[in-house]
Image 1 (cartoon, helix red, strand yellow):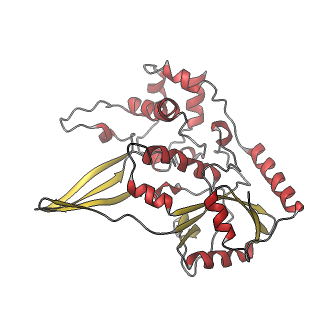
Image 2 (tube, rainbow, N blue to C red):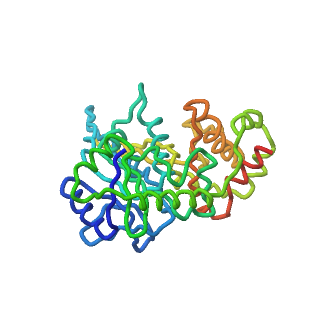
Image 3 (tube, rainbow, N blue to C red):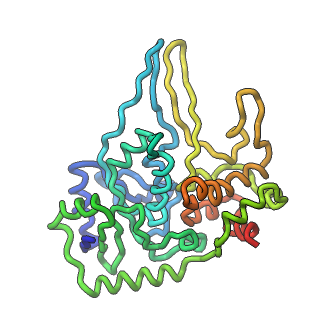
Length: 335
């Protein structure tokens, strides 16, 4: 695959070139912390971070979006996004998560046109991890601090430079468009990259998840779920900050004969998530909702898509207000 080296101080040249043709998203430090945002003329891209709080799924699957409007008996779909975007700096775990979301929203039978148009028009440049957090466990779920899956280009920090490596045809075409910006890396650059990757992989916390799907098949009615759910507040932060959670609800806002339909991200940890129009709720307790969350990620998605829908980013651990740790939950299931 094509490789190219660029000085960190020259990253602005690449950003300026990209912005002539589309939008550049990068990590920006603001009043609310670190976020993946569109770069304005005065914004500086941040490279010094372990990860950011909200996953990149919101670039393709927004918190809320209007999908159609209607008046009288006519309905109008909202136009698809045609924005050409480069999304820079997502971690390899987050790049991988987009492949899992693709399995949900881009299917042979049922394709979400809004999601697909954003994916088709976006280029993902992932930035390899140098300092994984204590809450990270990506290598336990088949990911890596330098994983290439889901990325069009994988970038590595090598001293005062960034080493770019194309991971897809789209990534190769992108790098070929800027021959004056990317320089050929030397053997010392490649060696430095390999040493950084090896060191990062050794820092990742691990948990043995072998047999987790089979274990879950036999513990649907286990008292373990009640025990685990005792501390859970049902706040939903674990699902909103999860890069692979994809539940949503559809709502209509209507005034007389005019209205609009809105898709809103939802959480299976909320009591109202399964509340039926009749008033019946098949999941009335925290215990049942906790079971559904774990079963869905580590059993049902394996049965339906042959993949665990967890990338080990650790956001559900670091953002939980009562310090629940999904690794401890999984260890309880396995033992």
